[in-house]
Amino acid sequence: MRAYKSGIRGKGIMPLSPPAIVERTPTDVTGLDELIEGGIPKGNLVVLTGDPGSGKTIFCLQYLYQGAIQHNETGVFISLEEKPEELMETAAIFGWDLEGLVKKGKIIIQTVELYDFDKLRDSIEDLVTKHKAARLVIDPGVIFHLYFERELDARKRILSLGKMLKKLDVTTVITNESSTGQHEGLYGLEEYVADGVILLYHTRVENRFVRSLGILKMRDTKISDKLRPVRITPQGVEVLPKEELFSEG
Image 1 (spheres, rainbow, N blue to C red):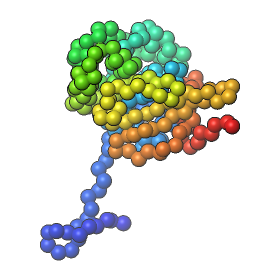
Image 2: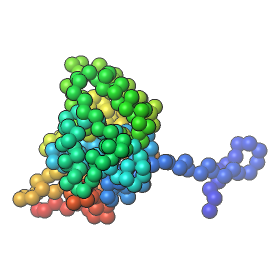
Image 3: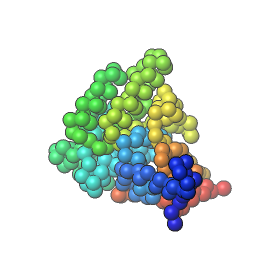
Image 4: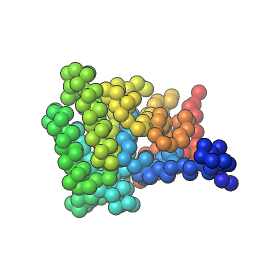
């Protein structure tokens, strides 16, 4: 059935404009895309927050690896902590030939050790532009706190980073650290710059750990407010989109 609204030109009614089609970048994290209408809106920036061991780096590697394999999209991994060899070893655990894709130029891993945020931003822009990357990971974003002494400077530069990534039209995941359900914000990145926020929980319930995922926000996307179970399998991170999380009493 066609939808109509009252017209302001002449008599009668005019058909409503059809809803805009949102182009999406699949995360290729099993089960997650089902929860976000097929993927992250193309060109958006998402903050992935979780505590140590929650699967953030595995998530990011999966996002880039499957993007290259399934969609022939080039990805850039900006590592602020781990060396390329360490990331390749982690990927190999899940059967992902990250080294092969690096050699082919489909995934670029850049370890950045200079604590100059402007140089970091310029380096990201150069890499994404040079390789025409569609996907970008910055891990771990919590290192941003080492770049600044004044919060005002931090907020200005974080905002400039977000604007630059928008201009590049690259779909970006930046990780952030949390502990015991609390996390230190990245100078307003989550609130004012990020288009989406995904939370990974790794909580202890009696004598075991329970993993779960929640979507705090995702621009132009209908999301659920329920936590969904997560497990780490030999194939990577898997979200169970049809199951609800129940804690043991």
